[in-house]
Image 1 (tube, protein in one colour):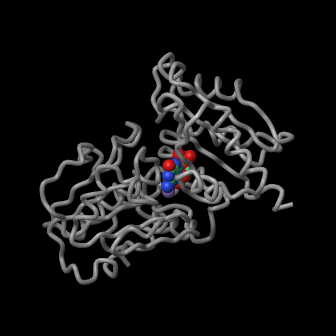
Image 2: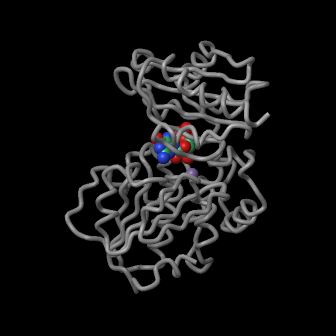
Length: 320
Ligand code: 5GP
Ligand code: MN
């Protein structure tokens, strides 16, 4: 229960909440779900949310307008929560607020979590941080706003209840949430499946230009800055491309990367299970989960691919 995590703090008067850089559905859901929940528990507390601006499609969630993306705060928080974030660097500007708080609590499901909080509650088997929060939250303080946010997060990190991380506990959590009554299919349609025209265009282009290698067991594609400028897209518009690459028949590992600077790429990897991509991403300074991970890498597209392939090949050899 969340109250156990808050032991010794009594009733906090100031609470900070943050999540990882480039927040995805689980991160946004966890942060806003926590915000709504804590607002119900601590009616007199001042609660602040620090997060890079999420995609507008999440604006239906309560607390979205309260998100502070400046990370500027002069004081010290009684309690600070870091959610869905594997390491302190990925908290970006919120890192120093987290470390400077009286009690820092990290709640996460990344296997690569470095244990950077005063309390680090990490469940690597959980589908999502939102699944963990659903278990930690007490019914009494939950409402439809909390439930909608947590449902959104679980839906996103499970690929709408399909990925192998979806287990019996995930469905138990979902059953606790759906009782609050909201339109779940509308949430998944509008935040997960629906794409803008340009998002579909850039997805199509990534698929057209993808390359298969290692006898069809790996697929890779990249988008450079010129293409992003041409289509008028930012990194949020590229979410989901790596998952589409991954469902190519015969593929074990999918790699998608986009250029973030000269000879700099943000890399996303997905695996069907034989290859542990968290291990590879961690080797290159990133992290994530066994089947979904990411990192930043330098070099040309082919340099990056060669570096990653060596690790993938080694793991494939040893797993045979
Ligand atoms: P995505 O490929 O969707 O950006 O990320 C897949 C998973 O890996 C997510 O759980 C995400 O938090 C994690 N991840 C992606 N990039 C990084 C990174 O640079 N460092 C760490 N620690 N985790 C990452
Ligand atoms: Mn997550």
